[in-house]
Length: 537
Image (cartoon, rainbow, N blue to C red; front, side, top):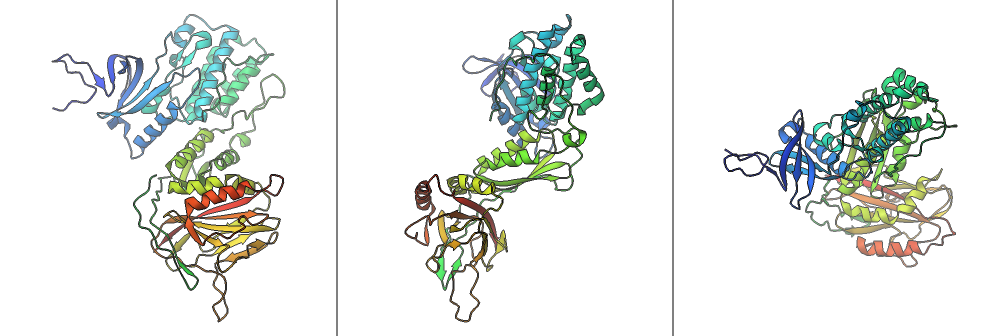
C-alpha cells in the first residue's frame, strides 16, 4: 500500500516527514487542517499547517487560489505578523510553514481580567495595523479572535495567517473585520468611562458589520477615542513567458500591401465572474486606507451609507495605471468591480490581480484579462512616462482601430489618430510577435507625420482615385495572433533620419530610448497611446 508523505512508519519507527520538514508533534487540529511543530533540514523549528489536497480542491479554481494566497502571504511584512517562510504541495498535502510565535494567547490573558486602558488601545492599534496591512496585500486571516493573538505587550503577534491559506480561503475581508470589531468591543468594554469609548461601542453595537468599511478606519476610530491619540507601536508600510513556439511570418510589401507579420501568440483567458451584476456586497468594504478623516481627535463621523457602498473604482484605476506592462481598466459592474484588458506576460497579470484584490477590500471583483507575450512589456516600458502623461490630459492623443481590435484575414489595418490640443509629430509602430517592428508612419510612401492640434487622420486607408496611388495601406494575413500598435507624439520628429520600414524590435527600442532622452526637459512632454490587436483567419 502506498503511504502519503506525512504518515508514520510505526514498524520501523522512522520520523514523519512532509517534504523537507520533519513533523515533531501535533499542536492543533481544526477541521481537515493540522498544525504541527516541525523542523527543517537546517534544524530550524517552524509551525506548519497542513491540509490534504483532496479537501482543498473543492472546485477547479481552489488549488490556484491556494497558490495565489500563499504567495501573497509570504510577501507580508509586518512586525505583528509571524513570517511565512514557505508553502507548497507534497505527497497530496498542501502546507504552509511559519515562524512560531510563543507566549499565552490574548484570550488566556483576558481570563485574568481586562487590559488596562493604555494596554487595550495599544494592543488594538497593533492588531488592526497588522490586519490592514494584510488586507492591502490581499491576504485574509479567516479566524481573527483573542485566541489567535499571542499577547506579549509591545511584542503582541497576530498568528493564524498561515492557517487561513489552506483552510479558510472562502473567508473574506468582511469576516476579518467582524472579528476585529468583536475584539474591539471586548477590549474596550471595561473602559466606557473614557471620552468617546461609549460612543464607539454604541456604533459598533448598532452598526453591526457596516459600522466601519475597513480595518484601517476602525484603527483610526480607536486612536480617536483618546484626547491624545495613542501613537502606534509599529507602522509597517504596505508590501508591495509563457510563449508557445511560433513560426515567423514573412513581411511582404507589395503594391503597398503588408501581409501581416503576425504569429500565433500565447493568449490565455483566465476564468472571470460573469459581468452580470455582482451580488450586493452586504459584506463588502471600500479599499482606500485612511478613508475616514478626523477633524479633531475624537471619534470620526461615520461615512454616509451611500458613500460606504461605492466600490473604489478610481483608486483601483490609478493603481492599475502604475503597472507598466498592463493596459487594463476597471469599471463598476452592479455592486462590484471588473478589471479587463491586456497584460504583457504572467508577471504583469499577477501584479494586476494582486493590485485589484488588495484595493477591492471585500468588494466583489472579477477579471477579464488577456495575457500577451512578455516581449511587449519592453515597448510599453520604454514609453511609460509618455503613456502616463497622455492619460492626464483633458484632450489626449488617441489612436484607435475602427475595425478592431479583432481583425480577420484580408481585413484592412486602419488606424484613426486624433492629435492632442497641440500640434505634434507622429511615430506609429507595429510590434509583431516574431520580434519585428514595422514603422507605419513615417514610411517610404509617406514622410508627412505632422498633425495639427485636435486634428484627426486615418492611416492605412486605401486611396480612392483610379490610379491607386497614395499612402501605404495594409491587410491582415497569416499567421495570426496578438500584437501591439504604439503611437508616439512629440513636438519635433523623433528621428532626424528615417528608420528602415522594418527592423528588429530590440534595435529599434535602443534607438527609441536614445531619441526620447534627447527631448528637452523644458519642452512639451512626449505622449503615447498603445493598443493590442487580435487577428484570426
